[in-house]
Length: 145
Image (cartoon, rainbow, N blue to C red):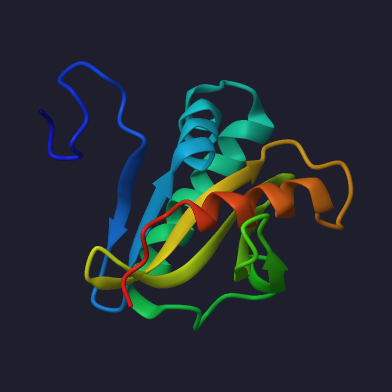
C-alpha cells in the first residue's frame, strides 16, 4: 500500500500539492486528474495556467486567503449537494482554468480541498453543473468535525 492507502501501482485519488503554516492544499478525484493533465500539456495557455496555479497553492498554504484578488481566489457561495448538505465553495482561477473546492479541516489541518474542475471555461460565470458536481464531490469526503 502507498501512503495514500491506494494499492501499489494504482493512481492515487488524492494528493497534497502544498503544505504551509496556515493550511494545506489537497486535490482529490476530478480536480487532481485535471490538474495533472493541464501540467502535462504543452500549449501556451495550459502552461501559463499550470505555472500560475502552481504559485497560488503554496501562497494559500502559507497565508490563506490573504493576498489573493477575486480574479485569483474567491468564495462562490453555498451549494446544496444531492445528499442535502450545503458546502461553501471556493474557486482558484488561472486564465480559463478553474479549480473548485472547499476550505475545511482535512487530515487534521485547515485545508483547501479541490474537488472539481472546469479546465476550459468559455465565460466568466461558473457553470452551475460543475458547481453541483463540486458540491456532490465535497459531500463524499469524510470531514472532521
